[in-house]
Image 1 (cartoon, rainbow, N blue to C red):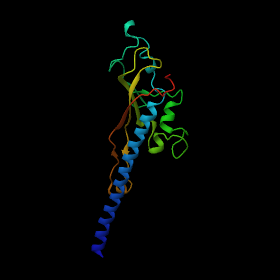
Image 2: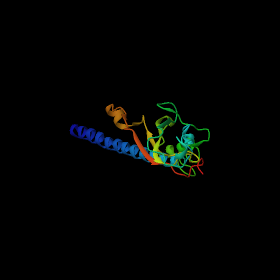
Image 3: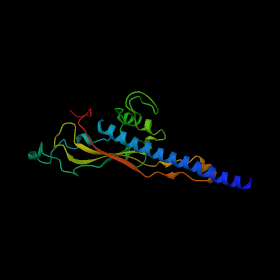
Image 4: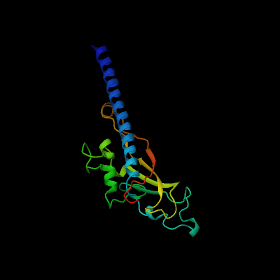
Length: 192
């Protein structure tokens, strides 16, 4: 009986550890998919930072009108969902909410295109960071602004351990920052 009690305790701890680490891998995959969907939604949405659309309105000289915009000409423009580092993302046109919540405007299963929180329910707007940088695409005086490189990243998330946290006192572990980078597209409503 004593041997059984010791063996069952170790076996149960090992089994619950496997469950917790399996859940941690699910959290990692869900967060990765959420950031990929966020980057895609951001690339086809109106920019959620101020000033980006007017960056290339005026060419440095008249002969450069219609000429290419060199890489590194502007940016980075950085915003977060709420608070955090950088400025808050604009949501006057509802674009950030559509990126984060999806077409239905709520987290969880819904209709239309999913948002970031549909794929990873623990995600909060403050965890989302969107960066627009110069890609070298587009031309001076382009209507609607430049074609940026867009990076969406998640920060400040932790892996949660349910069983191991209660049994062995494991604290939540910080999840490494993850990001997805895409090039802006002309499907945005602010572009012709």
